[in-house]
Amino acid sequence: MYENNSAAEMYDLLYQDRKDYPAEAREVAELIRQRKPDADSLLDVACGTGIHLEAFAGHFGRVEGVDLSEHMLQVAAQRLPGTVLHRGDMRQFRLDNSFDAIVCMFSSIGYLRTADDLNAALATFARHLNPGGVLVIEPWYFPETFLDKHVSGHALTQGGRTITRVSHSTRVGDVARMELHYVLADSEGVQHRSEIDELTLFTPDQYEAAFSQAGLKVDYAEPTGPRPGYFVGTAV
Image (cartoon, rainbow, N blue to C red; front, side, top):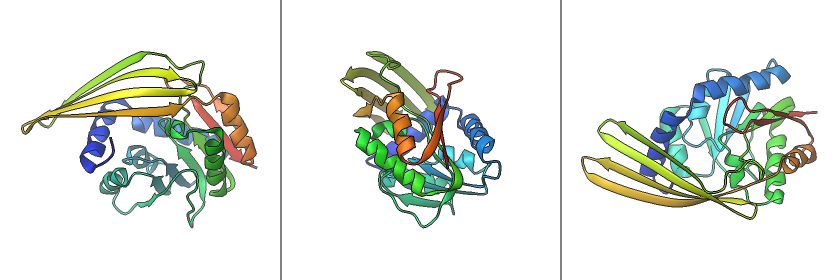
């Protein structure tokens, strides 16, 4: 879906209408400051179009983002002019800076395919943490919490455009396969996009093992609503 800026902007509009990004940023900032009260710098991994990053900028003196998609980063740059953004793979990026906090939101970690990928990503995150720094990951569903054959939909009308999104999710082994269809109607006509997303159903033990292997003390913050909660690690 993110093969061009138009697709990234469609994603941007739909999810701003579905999620309370500022509330999530406040929640995560509180988790960070409970463990590191003086935290003042943050890196958002898989920052996408920068909606969470914009919210985090209200809580931290310095924020940066990293994402694999150039098109998503272009939208993020428009939203956050002057903010340092990096293109990189979460398993192996190398930045010149380190941070008091690193976050990976919106279940983006689920796009990793294997436990080895998960371990590599956590090791990369840990290398970029300052002493006593905090890592917060919002996981994808666990094998026992995934809803097989789940159907969802959303529609938004704004600025003379209507966008709809429908999805159907099935489980294939330890992978959640999501078939998604997007329809955009505006004055120029109707456009249709479709995609297949595959996210790995890592177990809690796999997440915790990856944190421990990266040298981080980890605990799990239980969810307060339908979202999956957070794994929170502290550099020791």
